[in-house]
Length: 118
Length: 112
Image 1 (cartoon, rainbow over the protein chains, first blue to last red):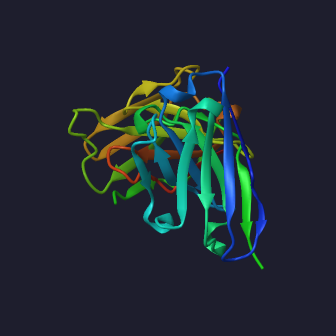
Image 2: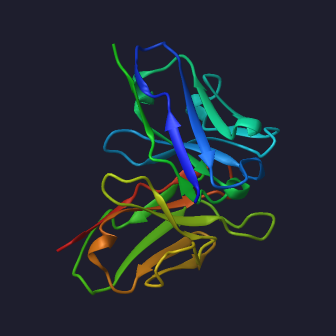
């Protein structure tokens, strides 16, 4: 059974940093693109970033470029999102998703809430 | 970036009756590889999103056959042949033909 479990969310002050993790199991992690998608409270879905199987390709939405970094550790079956210079508008539930080819997010975690507030 | 729009934004439906959601993209979603990366996702209240349909019309594993997708180019449709209570939620179209991936605003489906 495919399982994705996010962690690392919490309350952080504007300008602060946070590192999200996503632990994957039930599939060959190193064979799949992976993505982060977020959802602000009461709002729709916003794609944040994705990463190729070997980490050689990474793409970001403009609003996080230069502030967020997506990475992965295939030996640990884990996906990460390093978030720096956080802003109030980054407040959201962050989901990780398995994403074959970067084109079809087929399994999603339950999400982790990030709140940016003073 | 490709902008995705959906209509309607809210759809009260009667149990057992059909429902239809339209999605339009600001440019063609046909990729240079010949595929069209248009997906539909369902988000039930309090739940993460769930993939329903990918590449316009392919149902994902475990998705009931009352859900179907159609369309081409810039215009796409999700149909539910007979709405059931468990179908209540928000439905999003999503394009992954061009990065950044973009989602429609969502269509809320609830029971009349």
